[in-house]
Length: 115
Length: 114
Image (cartoon, rainbow over all chains, first blue to last red; front, side, top):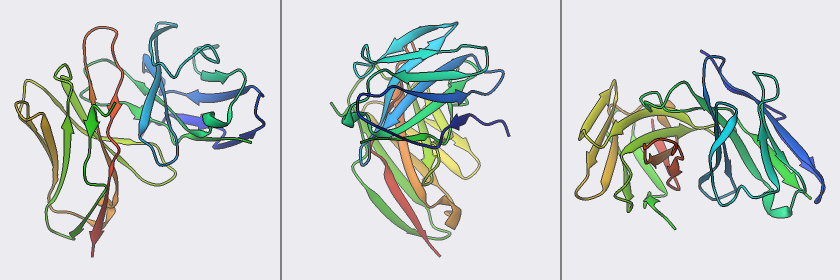
């Protein structure tokens, strides 16, 4: 069964450093998303991406965050200057259409720890 | 701002019996609802969805019921199996063009007792 692949599985970074979280969505999917889950809290929407541009973003997704689909297969989330409160599991997801009958396929996540 | 609530943080059910997971929402604009299952160290896995124009959707052992007037939905798993032990998330969205944000509940940890 096709999967959404995320790398790395765990990233530790110093506060103020830049991190790039990588995702390979399912190949025939057209819609891409990033979500995050702070430990003990609910899964929260960050951003959606379609047709090479952001289609929606949450209030969490401020100027420190950016997304890119650099080569037609990877989908990346960059955090320019990490803060302690950015520590969370970050999930990438993709979907092939907007019928929602199939839900979104999530990756296994990247655990980001900011120290 | 808890627009989607799962008031039971945990639930234990005997193997073979019915598991009923509940979810309430406050935003009447939500028109699509999804259930996800999550194992530790994995991402959420889609289980079943329902549009607000329906009141029931069934897929194998999983049935989702929607009561729009009560702003309540539930997931029924029959019969429950040990592999169903996981955290279950209810999620909702407003499916107008350009709005694809899923709003998740806090999850219910289901434990199936053999």
